[in-house]
Structure formats: C-alpha cells, structure tokens
Length: 455
Ligand SMILES: [Zn+2]
Image 1 (spheres, rainbow, N blue to C red):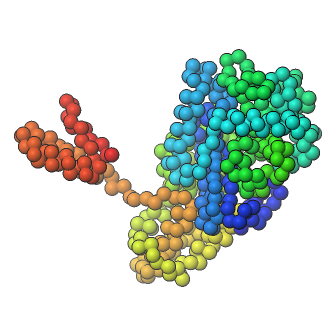
Image 2: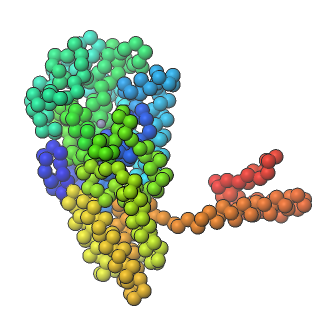
Image 3: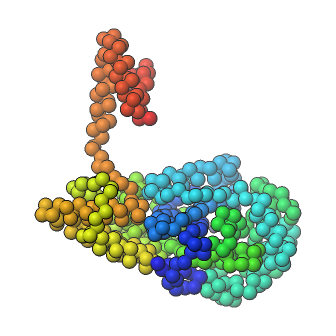
C-alpha cells in the first residue's frame, strides 16, 4: 500500500511504526464558525483513509482536535458579547452535526487545546531550557534558526519562506520567521498562568502536544488540508523534534481544497458553502460520492451541476441494490464478483485512488443490472461485493423512504384514539396509547389536541 508523503514528496510504501498499530492525527477545526464544504471534504478524506486502513487489518487510533482558544474566537466573543467558551461549544456541536450526517466515524479522542494547557506549558519550558525558544516580555518564541532542517516539510529554505510569507509582526522577535509558542496576555483576553506570566498557547504547539499525548512520538500519519503544510505543520515538526529529539511523524497526508471559481473556499473571503446546507440539499451519500470522484489531493471545483450528477449516480447505485437480495451476510462465494474487489483494492492501495474505486462501482452496477434477469445469482454476488465496498468507503446503508407513509399511519391511529376518547371509550384509547408506546411512539394530550413523537 502506497501513500503520497508530503515530507518525502513521493509515494511511500506504508509500513506502520509499531506492528499493525497505526496512530493517525487529523488537524481539526478552530471552532469559530460552522464547517463549510472544504472542511467537510478534509474530514471525509481522513475518514476514508482510516476506514480503508481498518479494512486492511490495521488497528487505528484516530485523534482529531478542536482549537477552542484563538484570536478569531476571542474576536467573535467580543463582537457578539458571548463568552468565548460558549462559542467553542456551539461550533463543536455544529461540527458533530455535519460529520455524523455524512457518516464520518467518531474519532477515538477529541482533545481540546484548553484541556492541555499544563502539558503545553511543560513543552514550552523544555523548548526554552534546550535553547530552541526564547522569552521576550511575556511572549515565548520558537527560534527557527536553531532547527537546522526547518522547512523540510514545505521543501523550502528559510530565505524562500520569508518571501511572501505572512509573518507575525512583533518588535520582540529576533528573526522574522520565529513563531509564537506562548502568547502574552492582552487586556480583555482569557488567560492562564505560566512561568512567563498570564497568557495563552500559540496554535502550533497545541497540535504538537495533543497528538503525541495520545499517539506517542514518532507516530504514523498526520493529516490536514494543504494550507496547513506551512506554517502550521512545518512548525509542529520543528517543535516536536526539538522537544523530544526524535522524528515526529512518518507520513504527512494533505488534502486538496474545494474551490469556488478557482479560489479556495474560505469563510474569510466570503466564498463558502455551509456543509450543513449542502448535505441537506443533496444528501449525505451523494456528497460523499462527489468528494470521492476526485482524488483527495486534487482540488475540486464547487459545482451544483456535478453535485446533481452525483445525486443521480447515487440513485443508480441504490436502485440496483434495491433489486438484488441482501443475502444473509454469510455468503463467502465471491468467485464471480471477487475480481471487482481486487480492482477496488488495487485502486485504493495506490494512494487511495478513489476515482478509480468509484469507476469499479459503476462497472459493477452496470454489469449487475444486465445480469439481474438472466443470471440473478451472479447479480446477487455483485450486490454483496458492492455493499462491502460501499461500507468500506463509508456510505450509509439506505432504506428507501416510503414517502412518509409511517407518519400518516400514526396520525390516523392518533385520530382514531381521539374519537374514542370523545366517546369516552377510555379503555381502548389507553390500549392504543400503550401499544404505540411499545413501538416507541409517545403521545401527549394537550389542550390543543394530541401530539406525538418518536422516542
Ligand atoms: Zn493542527
């Protein structure tokens, strides 16, 4: 199995550091706003890689963080007059809403920066003690010139990086590319006590600390969107390797953006589509399919037309699945359709080539449909392999909606019960209520009539 590694800039064979155990850290969100489609794509990529590793027999520990203290969160808190903690809570909830909806497996751990302040302070102390960081006023800066291989992830030398890079301005820094590991407190900001006075952690150090807390050092895979390569991941490497004196991460995996008219989807530029709205409009499985039809490292241009096409393509897949029997899950004969599974694995083994995997799915649907009448057994076998593949890729098993007929039936029964009560036939009315309760339908009699809900 090969993974494109940003660090080596080539396809590397994947060999876990510890037997078949894989540590996988995915940079999560700064919880200052709702996730947009670009975020959703990044986390879906992580999900697919994780699911495929699990399918290949690896034991994966998956960690995604929340950056819950940051300039933008503080700014928003001031603008709206809402406690900064409340802002984080709100968008963490939003994050789970959309990631659950598109069937992203929950991570094993969701550390938040503010839960790791003590460990972060200890890490910064080590950096200062070892001479990799220096203190000016209440700020602590990482001295990039002390880390001889700084720039190895982005593949740039310090001089090149300085050109065009957004450098944090500060008169206290020794060198323009030095970055903050601890920020001195400013009036009106939340703070924690540290050996350097009141302050809060820099962004990069949070991920260094939280990732190795759960996964050790070195660990196997670190992922994120491409815009995190520099400076975020470059700085994580510099700090973590300086702290422990060992390699930090073996494989660096970076996903492409969702673009709008060639520009990266971004809240700050006002170019974005909220993930929740897109999921609502097109459905979770079609959106997942839309992502998979492009390789994870390539950009996707947002296109309503292509989303509609993915919707139709998903319909073809689920229509076929509806026609073939599901089987009892114990069938082991894949002598006919096993070839498809092999092709699927070959595609995925080559740096998670999901467009090729999706092409295999379409081939299966086409052949499966053609065989439905003539050779239903073979069609059923294709159906079984197809379900396996869809499951590996994280699609949700779907039951066709029967146009809300269940809702209508419950409403009729509730009305019948209402009539019984009006005629004082309470015994039957109560019996109906109890029977419905057994099915998980809860009735509530109010002055405006009877309401019901599914438990
Ligand atoms: Zn991070």
